[in-house]
Length: 196
Length: 168
Image 1 (tube, rainbow over the protein chains, first blue to last red):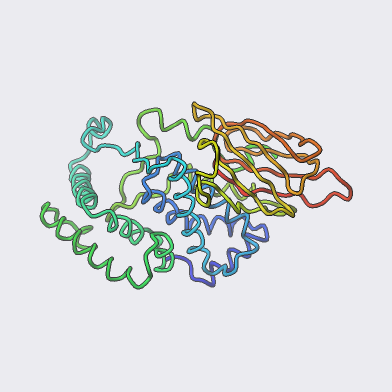
Image 2 (cartoon, helix red, strand yellow; image 1 turned 90 degrees about the vertical axis):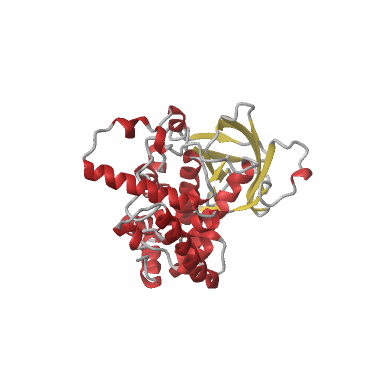
């Protein structure tokens, strides 16, 4: 679970007062959310790392003047999304990720001896990932956020993908249905697929 | 402040040119969720050391990339930024070198006045420079995240101005 508004406000206040442990709790709680937003914008790794860092520095610049510290997650998501757009504008076009490892051609993966079980798991994950990559972009963006651990709140997801809160539940349902069908047609039967 | 204290990792940009990406993490069980690379998480933790203390923060209030009409700029390779406002701030133009690796930054402190400026970068050690009497300063630095701490040279010494971090 993501932080409750009470905990979020508490950690923000403590971090503003110089408490490093509270800051690290915020990083642990929301780092994944920010990273997923950079992935949704298909930024190269270096750009994504810069957006993440800029977002955290922006929070530090504003930490003692947030209007609603309990909603810092949504604030971070909005900030990260805006920084992604800034970078995209800088490159004048959205740059495709250069660092996607092609699973079929990844030499390390091909030459690493693995136990049968691990191999089967890897194959299943690849198939699941293949199904995921076949989803429409909007579904991938939404599911990438929903599957995060800790799971963001709907308000945070709304800020991250720019979708009204009321649309998230229904869209999530439709996207998961699509994923189930894709998984079924690719013949994956696994606990992880069923648990979606 | 030492660069180590700024929460950055030197040369993180260049690493992706080395072919395989060392940060690429395997998909986690259950779906295509990529966990945050350790280097990114560590940088976020260390950013705490770079928090502005005893300084006013001048927010990024204008960025021609997002807010402006680029046609208004004579040179399309030039980006204009404003931090803060005319009572306490800076106008900045950033020109990127042809190779994309270095930028030239031209600063006009607002209101115009002589200042000492600490230039902080994710890619270079912190340096200090002085504006002229009218608050003008030009310098070059590697492309990356940048922030300035601007200290007006007058008595009584006012609180320094910390410009929001921005990727240039």
